[in-house]
Length: 100
Image (cartoon, rainbow, N blue to C red):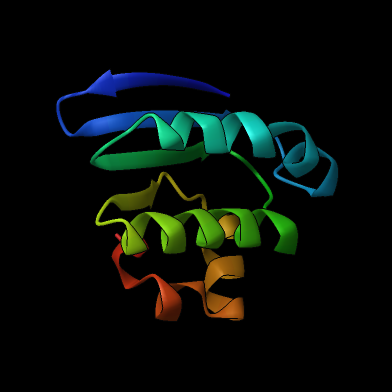
C-alpha cells in the first residue's frame, strides 16, 4: 500500500489480491492513513485482481465512517473481475459513486 496527496485528495494505491490475509495486514495502516485526511480519499484498485468479502467490508466500513464524518471515500480502477464481484454482491447499490 502506498499513497500520495493529489489535487483531488489523497490517493491510496493497493497492489495484489485484497483477500483475508491481505486485509489483516493492511487494515490498521489503511485506517491510519484515512484518519489523516480531512476531505476526499481515492482508493485505486487498478493493480488488484481480486477482492474478497473481507476486502469489500473493509472498503465499505471505511466509506461509512468517512461519510458520517462528512468526508468522501471513492474507489477507482476496477478491473472487469473486481467490477463484476462488486456488481454481484451489490456494492454499487451501497456506494453508487464507486460505479464510475
